[in-house]
Length: 461
Image 1: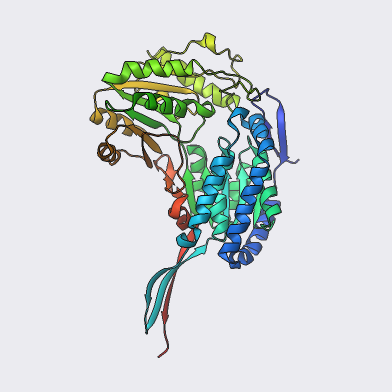
Image 2: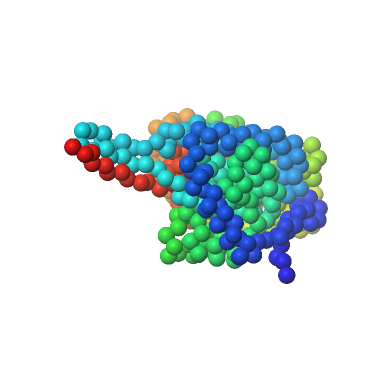
C-alpha cells in the first residue's frame, strides 16, 4: 500500500492536497541521481550558478498570484498580505550578492616558496526539511545558498504545505537548474531518518519542532553528517521607560499576532517597565480589538485560521490553564466568533501572568501573548533568560549602549532594538539552548553549507 501525505485545509477542513511518499528504494535512487549530478553542477562557474538560481527566484515571483491563494488554502494566511515573495527575493538576492566574497579562498601565503590557502567546497547533497509557517522564505534560506555554493538539494516540505516544493522545483527547473540538482521529495518521517542514517547527505538543515530536531540528531548520530537546526522559540520583548511607546506597542503586538502568531521569531511574552505598563496594555488591547478573524480568502480578514486544528488546540489549552491559574484575559470573545474548537482561534492578551504558567514557558505558536510588569533591567534580563529557548529578543529603548549591554546578558541568537520579528539576511540566523544549533544566511550560512579544504603547495625550486 502506498503511503501518502495529506494537507487538510484549515479554511474548511477539506482535503486540499494529497501526495504519495517515496519508498526507501525510490528515495535512495533520488539521492543517487543527486550525487551524480552534483559534481557537474559544482564544476560550473559560480556566476552561472548564481544566475540560474536568481532566474528560478524570479520565476517563483511570476507565480505569486496563484501562490498567495494556495498558501491561504494550505496554511491559512490571509490573502490580503500578498504572500512571501518580498522576503523570499530579499534573502536570495542578498545571498547571491555576497556569494563571490563568501566563497572566495582565504589566502594565507603566495610567496616564492609556498602557496597556501583555504578553499570552500560543497558538501555534496543537502537535505532541506522546511516548515509550513513561512514555507517559501524558510526554504529559500538554505536552498539558494546551497545551490549557489555547488551543492545538490533535496527539498522535503511540511505536509501542511506540499505545493511549495512543487512550485519551487517547477520554477528552478524552468530556469535551467538541472532536474537532479534540485529535487522536491515527499518523504515520511521514517524514510527521512533512514536516509540520514545511511549517510545519504553531506548536510541536513531542519526547521521545525524540538522533537523533530531530536529525531534528526538521533538519525545523524555516528554518521558525522553536518546538521543545522532551527527549532522552538519563546521570544521576549522588553519595553524600557525611555521607549517610543506607540512604536513598541504596534511592533510587538503585530509580532505576536501576525500570521495567527505562527512565526518562528514571533513575540510570545512581553515585559514592560512599571511606568509604561498600563498605557502599553491599553494600547495593545485597542489594536487587537480591531482585528477581523475569518476566512483568509476574504480581503477583509486580518487574522486567518491556524494551520491545523491541533495547533489551535494547544494554544487554547495553554490559555485556559493560565486563566485557571489566575491570568486575566483582556480580549472579549464576543468580538471573535470561533468555530467551536476548530482552526479559527481568537487572539488573546493575558496579564497577571507569571512563569509558572505554560503560556509563558512553552512555545505557543499562536495568537496569544502574556504581558508582565517589571521594575527594571535586572528583572527583565532574568525573566528573558528564564526559558529553554533562545532565538530572538526585542529591546525597546532610545539608548543603543543600554541595548547592547542588555543584549550581552541575554541568552539568544539575535538581539533586536526597536524592531522585532524580522530576519535580516545580512546577519546570521541562529539560536541557542533548545532553539537549536548552526546558522543560516549571511557569510556564516555559506560556511555552514560548505566545508573548508586546505591547500599547502610547495613550489619547485
